[in-house]
Structures are given as structure tokens and as C-alpha cells.
Image (cartoon, rainbow, N blue to C red; front, side, top):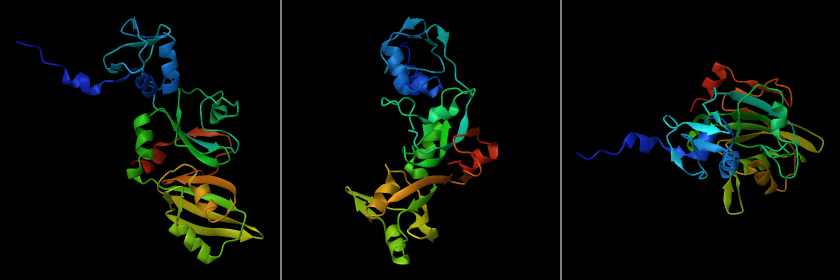
Length: 247
């Protein structure tokens, strides 16, 4: 009798570079580099194909002769300072958010979403890719709240127009809500809530109304508040905080 294919194994197989990332060992880009350099073995054999599909539950992966096993799940919140880029390595030599994690006993973690170099505030980092993808999925509609200082004092009519959105480069950019927090002289602070994440969405939206952004701070993601966490510091999320982000 012919042997039936192992359907379970085929369904659970994942690309080698992606597996190393999901195990929390390194980023996918770093994994691809390790594979290309011949430093990765699967079941005792050196592999140079980063796309080779393997079963993480059955196959044994080694890097430089050391077994790679799943790291403990880590969920961090970081108060990102202005001027850092949200990446592991920067070819231009700029400071990155990983500088804030120096000295901490952590497995490899990745940013959950982005904050551009000029933006600051709440940034999540984790090695749980499934959890991160759930938060980033547009279908989850996890709200993100920002406090934005602008170089003008908008009237009510302009706030209404902000809320209606604007088409920029063929995209309709909108906000879930826009409200004035305070104003004084020639500047004002707005609270802007988004339920989707597009590249530089707030800056582009306000730019469509010729409004200059002076500061942009993310203060909340869903029910999770930045709170009093010091700038440049990171801490683990509590079980209660994780529950507020359940999608």
C-alpha cells in the first residue's frame, strides 16, 4: 500500500529564514545572510537556501554549531526618543531604537510597526510575530493615539476639514478623530486618533492643509497608555496590559 504524504508536516512547514525569525533568533534579513554564509545547518546538513521549507516542530536547526530553540515570548513598550530610526541596522550609521535596549537581557525582538526618525513616543517590540501581525492587521482596527504640535492655531472649520481627510498621492488619508488639546500664540497641540497605519500618515495629512508638524508623539495603542515611562526607556508589558491589546 502506497504511503500517504504527511499532510500535517506539509501544512506546518515554513521557510528557513522566516523560521529563524519566528524563533526569535534574529531578523529575517540577518537569517538570510547567515544561510548564505553557510553558517546554518538543518538536521546536520549545511543549507544555503533561505527559502527551504522546514517543519520547526520536527527539524533541528543549528547556527555555528549551536542548536536554535524557541526563545521565551517578550513584549516590550519603549518610549522612543526623537532622532532614532526604527530599524536594527542603519547603513547611514544613525542611532536606532535598539540603542535603548543595550544592556538588557533580551532575545531578539522586532518593532511592532514603525515611528519615523522625527517621531517619538510609544513603540511596541516583541519576538512574538503572530501577536505583532495581529496588531498590525488593518482588520483589527487597533486605535493609535498621537499628540501633535503644529505651527498654527486651527479654527473649528479647519478641524472639521482635518477629520474629513484629504487625498494625497492618490491615497485618501483620514483620521478617526481630531480634536484640539490646547493652543497658544502661533502653535497648537492636537490629539489625532488613527485606526490604520500608512506611511507618515499624519504628516502627509496635515501637509495637505499646509500645516507644519513640530512634534509628533504616540501616546497610546488601543487601551495601552505610554504613561510616565521615561524617554529612551523600555519595560515589559504586564499581563493586564497585554489583555488590553488582545485582537
